[in-house]
Image 1: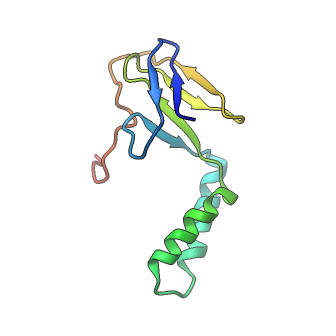
Image 2 (image 1 turned 90 degrees about the vertical axis):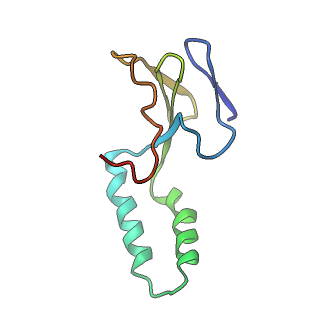
Length: 109
């Protein structure tokens, strides 16, 4: 998919990496299988960290389903990916925060 049309008419582009208004959602049911996959790969005896990292990335889809989520930077709506690639829109009660998905590593408060 390359773009999503928000209910307000704004176009959200999905054409690259590191997009400030895009994120992913993982269900609680899939969170622990994700950690189990990480443990399984970490416990393997290998000094090749790059190989282990790439194996984790290749196999993650077999364990969990990450759903895309976008936040419109005009109106603040969240667009959450459904089961078949469609999007469902949710309007926040407070429209003041439009950067919910814009996070820099190390910014934990």
